[in-house]
Image (cartoon, rainbow, N blue to C red; front, side, top):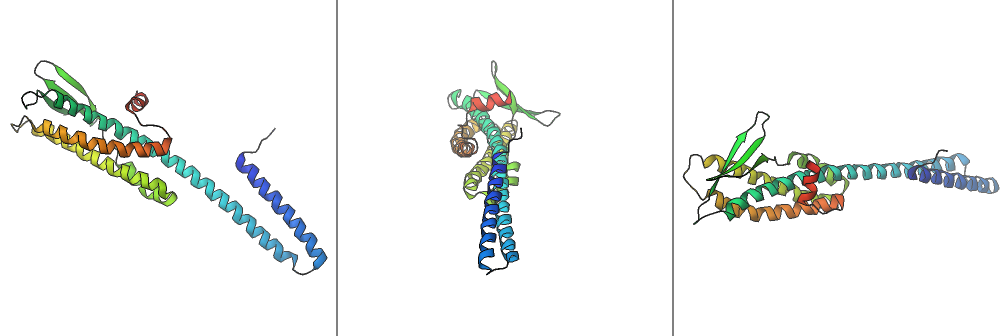
Length: 231
């Protein structure tokens, strides 16, 4: 047996109400003879159309917001993963300095697929390596205007997260520049200085990403959550 969904049931209820209202008005007109029936029918049809159109727009807006939240939550996850990558790299240099000098060097290479691989080289062994993620900025920018059109409260969470993504991009670019500069500039403390600065900035970046993610999903953004999704 066919079972109507919530939206269909509410639409049927509205039509039943309008039908009953029309019947009552028609009965009243027969008794009073004051207003032409055609005029009442026109008004009732107009009101019914407006009610149904309003419900349709509300349903479409709800679906649009749900889709935007899903998209931007994923962007938060990817940026969160990159921010933790940079934080981990910086922590290695900060924790292993000796007499104010860094004991490791950061080397970056470009793969044929244009991915950036990093490797932390020590005097005795490698401290870590992997693929340095790209910051997710473009999607934030693309959907910023769409968000402000459908929900102002939503936009108030998205804009700070977008700014955080831009700041994260600047940090990543600086990290890449330092790794390349170390090859021809004799300055053993460049990475140490950057590490102290970056860790402070990342706290602010992560805070704004977490606020938007919580708003979009109702969940707490954590490294474990992101890591499991990327596996």
